[in-house]
View 1 (cartoon, rainbow over the protein chains, first blue to last red):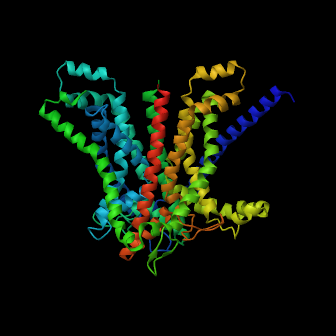
View 2 (cartoon, each protein chain N blue to C red; view 1 turned 180 degrees about the horizontal axis):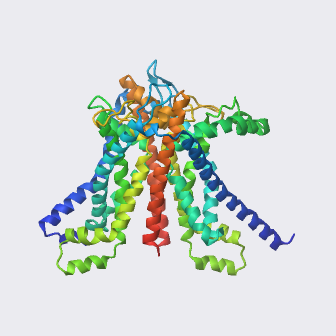
Length: 280
Length: 313
């Protein structure tokens, strides 16, 4: 074999290995998704959405309490996390642009995005559950909001930085004060990007389980009282999947399907918006 | 763009509100540190910090707690999952940037992002109901049969394959971190200037030689940052491993043994902690985890920033 042939052979082997690696990645995605789809659709029925859980081990029952609880917890997390995140990002990209303070906060937020969510859960437990003496829904929402804030803050900062500086100068030239420029010009120019960031951060927290385990805890009964323990889909999945009953496993699959579809659809929409809006 | 522009009173108000909002991030981090230190102080006082980290005893009945079994479990699962994930992730990045035809690049990129978006509890449940039985019935017996006679592997593959063990947990963890590593490596590869690559092609280099000798050396800082970032994520991953690790406090030498990581112990035992010292020891674990992942993530961020600065020179 000549040197050229050996080099070509080595190259094609290496490139085939890389292609195989991509195949393995796709294989896992397809494997997990089809598995969740098959098991989830098999377990899906109307009573899942309309009924509360039956007694442990008894057939029937549904997860109405968990669906409502999940909606409430996520809703309040969004209501707390989004304004703080968007305003914080505004400070970094506008008033403090280019300053060391903005860079430090931006780096800290980047680290916060990946901090273990279970640690956030223990934090929320110490400040919101221990003083009250019992688990409550607000603690769950706060824990999720703590996770959301850095995500929204960073995307807002990035999106506002993309708005050309000349646009602001044009508004300044008309005599507008800075806050008016931000609210009426810059926000409008970056609206799609900020909304996408909010969507993606919702997808992120909707699947979080660890921070809810010891904040919102769980509740077998229907409740909309955020001052009491409240059920969520993810914690219910954990409890049901680890439980001994087959009917629990079925409902856990169905709940997994709902969560996965919800999150994947939101993620896809977010990505497509970014592609459509920011394609070069 | 300087603060000197703020003259209008509403402007001052808006600036202060936004400044306070951005400071919440700092407050949360400082708050976490204060809470973890103060809540774990009871355990640190009783056992001593070094002793707490180095003791393998975790016994709620006698109320003696040491973190080593948990730290060990965290390190083994994280290390093993990185070992499995890195080659595949870099392979994917090479495929997407250099090999795939243009019409495939978009869809594969989206597929990887979807893999990253699937919540960890779904990975955990899939692992428990689908992967663990497959591991127990097919893969682990096969590994034992073919490799179990070799010297090192005989220890690694000792015991009855149950599927609920270190190996299964590491595989699930590796599937979870592949997307992070792959997408950061892809972005780093993409930053290699085409002029540099074209010069290598002009010298007669094959595609693989260009990748190996030009693209990877040029982007190694970014790729390394991505790997460290994945390491930080893997350290703190909870639900994906909580289902399949068995929560058993021991220094396992076999990959077929059940074990416990810091996160799994927290998830399983936090609500059951009935004594102050038990809860305080769990907070001690959370503190160790927080410090480990914070330092790792800070290093990753530092590397990625340096990479960014290098490419945009």
